[in-house]
Amino acid sequence: MEFHAKEQLPGLLDWMRQQMKACGGKTAVIGISGGKDSSVVAALAVAAYGKENVVGVLMPDGIQPDIDYSNGLVEFLGIRHYVFNIQGGTGGILDEMAHLGMKPSRQTTVNLPSRMRMVTLYAIAQSEDAGIVLNTSNLSEDWVGYCTVYGDATGAFSPLGMYTTEEVIALGADLGLPEKFL
Image (cartoon, rainbow, N blue to C red):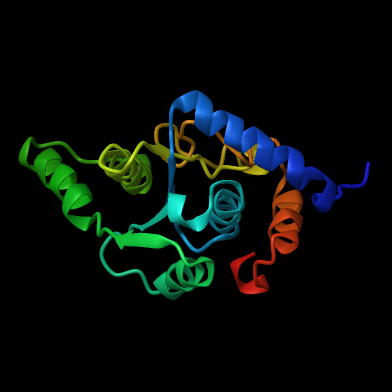
């Protein structure tokens, strides 16, 4: 079955508006990594709610060499955004583990930044005007388990949850996102 993004968008945007209303929300809060999923969710949110009701949150863990993509996206979309460095949070937890004599596993060090980002998104959403965190995971990533529970796989609802990676790219292209964000 062939995918037609142009035919999908009206129903998806209506569904997103219904979900936001059901959550009692007004402002979409989105973690912006600069990758295709967060880029497309942000563009969808702008289309569904208007750019004045979308907040992007860039969350480097220390220095992030590719943060220019994230900055470029929020500039392209014209959305309000925050740069919130999570290094103090992740470092604080790892330091406390070391203080207690615990050695963090590789899984801990890999997943902790994703979970710290979600804690940050919820803190910002609760400080915004009826802020609601949107999940940026897509079906392909969820299917193969390329997500972190209580991390990037968290949010009030998932606009891309039923779309494969290829379909996400098609949606983004139809929304007018430049190829570098896809």
